[in-house]
Length: 335
View 1 (cartoon, one colour):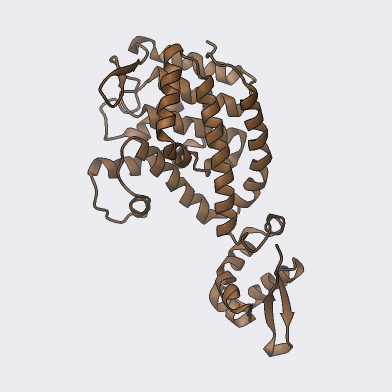
View 2 (cartoon, helix red, strand yellow):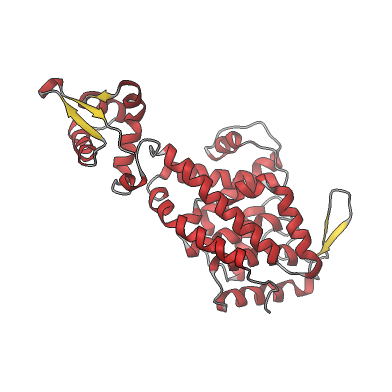
């Protein structure tokens, strides 16, 4: 089996753009555990919203934290299932059918009868007017089609960015499950992308797809007509690039890069960045800070605080002002 698509100049240009941006983002993102969890929840919220789950980001955050939320039981269960699936999937093999089925079981347990199993009956995809726009693979051929698809993906040497888009598209075309095909297509693309760059475990590509939901449906429908994923690949690469561009600005702003350059952030470890973030608001308001105040705001011992402040002085972020007990540390303009 070789899926039908054409590699275009537009795809190649987007691959170059994505590759240039991803390394810098990876350095910053890997150091902030809070943002990683926050963006995983964004991924889940957007992917489920595409399938008409009505829960908000805040409600999903509460559900994952174990809090009670007012909402439809089905929607709540979808969130719980999806979070478990996203927590485990990135240790799986994207070319193993057993892992594919295991992920589907996690995603749909207690929601459908054929959870973790390929469907046993025919299925159609309908538009908003009730018209059939696509008929999935006949059930007796689903296993072999998925097997052939994964074997092609394992062996083919096309760029992983393109390969992940093809897999996503083909899963939607085969429609291997009674329910959950869209969620699985997006999840499995994330898994493939994460094998290329680990940062994709935490980048919420689904958020930008959700913002362009109608285009997403349109390019899938175009591809359905002759089973050609070219337009879908171009669309998804564009979504990936937009996500990275938007996400880099969000991450660096939240981590203090509205004050610090990425070059400085790259010289700081996770704890040093967290320390700076804990005193950032005070510095912006007052212009300088004492060691005692830094220790209080960061919740760290004075000796640890002095070490972190010394690092910020070395990087040119802070400058010492005054002597002994009256010494303050002034925020420099370092961008």
